[in-house]
Figure 1 (tube, rainbow, N blue to C red):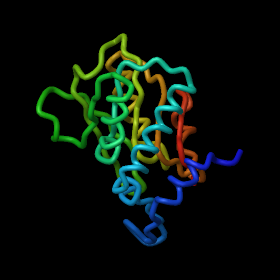
Figure 2 (figure 1 turned 90 degrees about the vertical axis):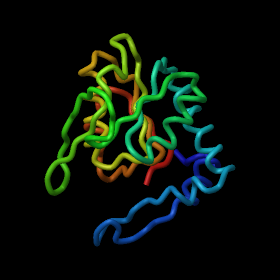
Figure 3 (figure 1 turned 30 degrees about the vertical axis):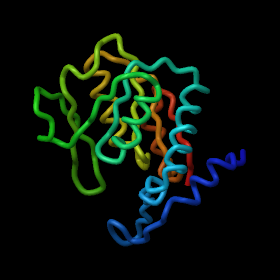
Figure 4 (figure 1 turned 90 degrees about the horizontal axis):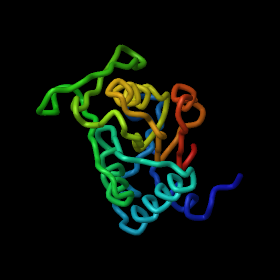
Length: 179
């Protein structure tokens, strides 16, 4: 199916940065979209539409550091729900829970406050991009470990060739732009 004109416009606004952060990688830079207030507004409108079209009930938006914060906080405001940050280790000031995930060379981990979600919460996990799905899967692990349910994952961009959504198969995966 052909993307809508709005999604095509958003897609064209994203800058490709070759060989970043290492040779052979094409980095999808969303700062070119974020700097334009009309495009940022359009992206948020379209992401809210994805959530509403999926008929999701959401109590909290949980967003992954750092570009996920930009989108997640605005989406939480638009959806009228609370916002929860997931951060790199050592950045949150209170008791946390952590989850590790594999990188190409080694592992990394993320944390969230141990009281950030309630057992009855339906959570929307937001990030700017899904590649292999490792970070998002770790975020989902944190949410479910605290007793909440992942209502869906939402991404501005999905790199479809990396099949990251397969790691998130237990919950719906929504993405606005696919490359």
